[in-house]
Length: 314
Image 1 (tube, helix red, strand yellow):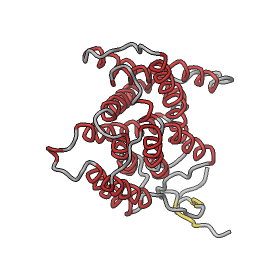
Image 2: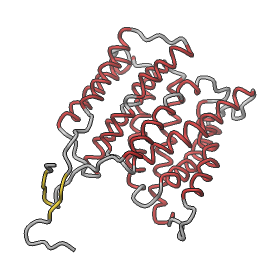
Image 3: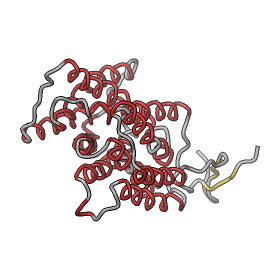
Image 4: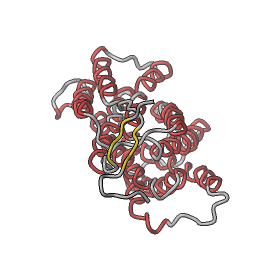
């Protein structure tokens, strides 16, 4: 089998392994339901986000305990405390704004626009992790932004619905979260990183909901069921599996799969909520999916690294 031979100093994005790909696909499929569930909350949007994070913590604690079974040394959380706090705050901003966006626009709009985040994360991966994407990714970013504008109705910024604007702000926050989690995964396993960032998010969102004087306690069985599903299934399992993938796959592949989520969310919204997409929204979605195809990672042959001349192998 022929293989490329490159100097050891060459920078390439890491290849994804099978576990990473399976975790990414499964996690994305689970998260696709989040926008539908949010519509059935009987508490305020920030309160719902706080419950989502808070109820994820016990499930993530169990997962983290199982993952560390057999390990003699616990992770040093003090060394990564600052990025953990930033990850939690970034996700708090993301999920809080997304919950507000869902109630200010259609699920399809909020999901499509919110999922510009992975393309922003690709750009961040190139800047901060030297995962240099091909030129088509830069075009994909511009296309995704145009698609978001089309889905928002192609109106002037002053006329964009508040839900669409919140969705785009949530996308920026989620891109930051993905990049910080990728940094943390060098020192922490996926459930531990997700656990502590969720705990920070829960505290921040609870404070925000109280300051906003929202209804905090679900009043119906359905309301409690929704917050449990959002916390345990959507975040603990869905985002937990995404954190697994972040540590085992390049940012470009993560962007590709996560950006494929909106069509499923739109389909669920049509079936459950009766939200039919307009021709303009379909056009915007098609533009964003075109950006997905452009941002997909190249399939390269295996690379054999050799030390530069004058450098000896250890």
